[in-house]
Length: 255
Image (tube, rainbow, N blue to C red; front, top):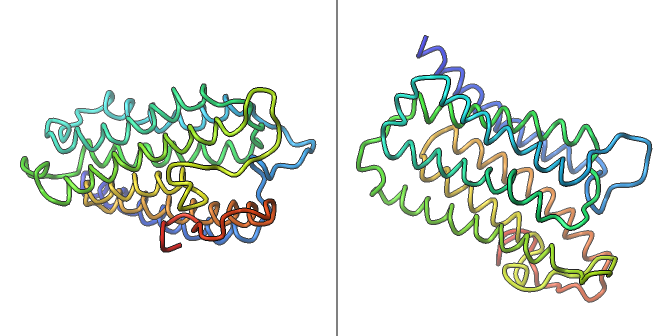
């Protein structure tokens, strides 16, 4: 049974890669319907705080369920525990802290919420099942340069992501409306500093895990967020005549 399930987890990782590539193309061809791009209509929408909390929660709950419901033999090893903790820390912040810091926020279309919810179940299972049952690391993997560099990138990326979200939340003073140009932090270099942080974070996780499953998640994140960042960049250029032309889209000094 184990070789069969290991094959299935690898297959799910390849599917995730394909979903990222297809999703990137699809997002370029269709009109955006979230946040600032949402237009009023009859479609059912989920309040912003509830949407973010509930859609991200499976990436926290599913791994805990997977580990509680099985022997989770591999979690006796420090590298596996640390890697799974890296994944859980991110989603604890995204599902239990981030939503309740949102100021206002436009409701999310139901189908967008459902897609995100399903993906978090999928990815939460993929990452946690692999790390808890099949990922094999030497005890000294935590001193390997790939793990150390990956962990540092993960931590730096998460901090950039959290700081960038803080800047976006505080763009408007109480009572103000409308959009402003983000200033400070990595917004001085790229339009989508929050997305840049998340891409760095999951690329670091991928490097630290040195696995197909971690790499698939990093690729998916890069494909989807790069496309969304391009949309944001174009919107700012059209909205603000004084938008800094030197800013890149998502990768400082490159893209």
